[in-house]
Length: 239
Image (cartoon, rainbow, N blue to C red):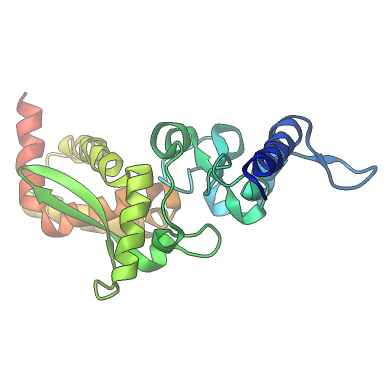
């Protein structure tokens, strides 16, 4: 196709997506209901009930996934208009992930986790560290010997800035934990024992997508960073 012909074809795809799928809905049958973005969101949450209260990308809590999230294009529709309505190119992401972070960023397919085909959790793990007196969270490959996974993780984190956002969450995780245990007035040994027991009791909760990162942080504090937590909890109480 010539440059002008490509421009015309792209305009058609853009029109179909904007005028039909985003507004009026695409008729699936001559007399049947129209299919639009809202119906896609409802179908997504129905097929993925474990994600009905959090963003599938950043795992931050949402009261109503279908209402509070956008139908997102993995490949931007301006760059790839032919895939504007392809089901494998559509997924839900919260407005923060879509509008504030990803925007129109495009990562090469060879460096991307593909929606519905790849599962980030199977290839990566959430790791908490402490650097320069600050708790930090990062996504790291389960198998460092696979450079392709690291490339995909780098692209995924770059698109949505997850490391930075989850690192900021550490502050609220710490405040919740400190508020929970400070009022119990336990000595150090008793507090450590209770924290570990509480983590085990809530094992099923930590497996929920919206609590997954917090559960990893909780386990890290109680198993590897307890002395620092104990000291900082009491220092905060003295302020």
